[in-house]
Length: 298
Length: 133
Image (cartoon, chains in turn green, cyan):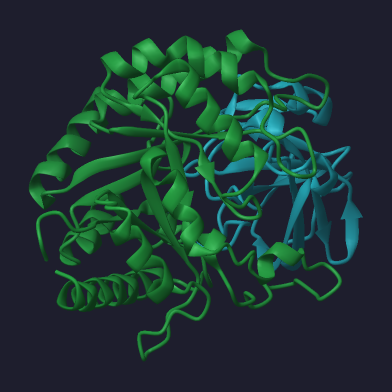
C-alpha cells in the first residue's frame, strides 16, 4: 500500500449487540489490530463506561490499549438530541454545552473528529437550526483541541441536497478548518437490503432499497470531506458486497485524492460474532480493490 | 457482561412480602446501539402469559432512580447506559407464580434524528423467564 493511499479503521458501531454481551473493549481492539488497521472509531454515549464522566482509571485503560494495539483514535460519535423531551426542544445554550462536553472528552481520549448526530425537524431530515449557532460558538474550542466537527451525510440524504449545501456554505462563510463533512457510504447503496427481523413490505421505507447516489457526486464536495464511514451490510464468501458498489466508489475517492479513513460500519445481521467476520471481509475487499487500482494507475 | 436477550435471566422477581406480593420486576438491556437520556425512553409495555401491563402504568428504575412515565419523559439529565440494565417495575396484586412464564417486552424509544412521524421506535422481544421468589 502506498503511503498516500486510504487509511483503514473500524467503528465499534460495527460490533453493536456483540459489544458488552460477547465482546469486551479489549477484544474489539484485538480484532481491529489484527486487520492491520490503524484507526478506531467509537460512539461516546455507547462505548465509554460512565459517559459523560468516565473514571480516570478507564481513561488510562483506553490509552494503554491504544499503545498496546498500536491504534489511533479517529472519530468520536456524539448526539445533539434536540427533541430533548416530549414537551420541549433543546436550547442553543444546551446544544453548546453538549458539544463542549463531547469535544473535551473526545480530546482527552485523543480523537481528531467529533461527529454530532443532530436531531431533525422535518420528514426530509433537515437538522434542527440550533446546530448552526451552537457549532459556531464551539469552533474556537475545536481549533484549540485539534478537532474537526463533522456531521454525517447519511441515507436518505444524498450529496446533492440543500442540507449539504447549507453545511458547505457554513464552511465557506466562516472560513473554519474545524468543520467538515463525514460521508456514510450507505448513500451509494444500489441494491435493496434484506428485510430486518419483523419488517414487512408494507413497513419498508423506500430508502432501504438504496438511494443510488452517483459516486461522481463525491468530486465537487471532496475538499470538504474529512472522514468516511464505510457503511456496509453483507459481504459474501466470494468477497462481493451485495449492496455497496465499492468498485465504482473507490476509484472516485482516489481521483479526489482522498487519503483519509475508511472506517468500517457494519450494519447487517446481528447474530453473535457475525460482525467480526464481516468486518474482516470488508477490509480484504477494500484492500484488494485499492491494490488493483494502484496497479492500473499508480 | 450482559445477556444478548433484552430481558435478562437474573432480576425477574416478585415485589413485596411473600404474604402480600404487590407486583414484579425484570431487568432490561437497552435495545439500542447507544446509551440515551432517560427522557428519550417512552416506557415499556410488559406482557406475561398474554396478560398486558401497559407502559403508562409501569415504572422504570434508571441508575437507582424509580420513575413513573411522566417523570421519565422529563428526565433529560439521567442516562440509561448500554452496560447498565434498567429495572421495569410492574404493579400486580399477588405478584407472579413461581415457575416459567412467557415474558414479552415492547420498549418505546424516541430518536430525535428520525422524523417525528416515525417515532417512537418500538422494539419487541419475547422469552421464557423464571420466577424463583
